[in-house]
Image (cartoon, rainbow, N blue to C red; front, side):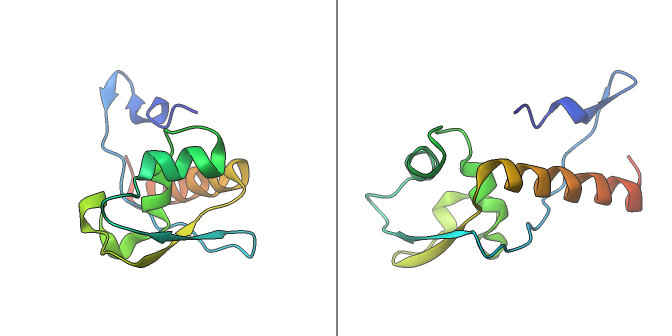
Length: 102
């Protein structure tokens, strides 16, 4: 998935907002340990692809957009399954732009 393809309108780039993903009953939990946990590894463990750390951060907005802000011994919400979570993300982005414009 290229989450940036929607950022170009009439050859002009727009910034993607930070949107909160809804929690689902199928979401997973992960015990984060500073020094051994990394979002790319967590993404690879749950999705088989290391590039979805950003999606995990979207599901945990209390830590902002930087992995360094995640405290040691934190339980992270991991959006699951991946395809449903990507649909949730796209829907949240589209709702944002419909409400606030491009």
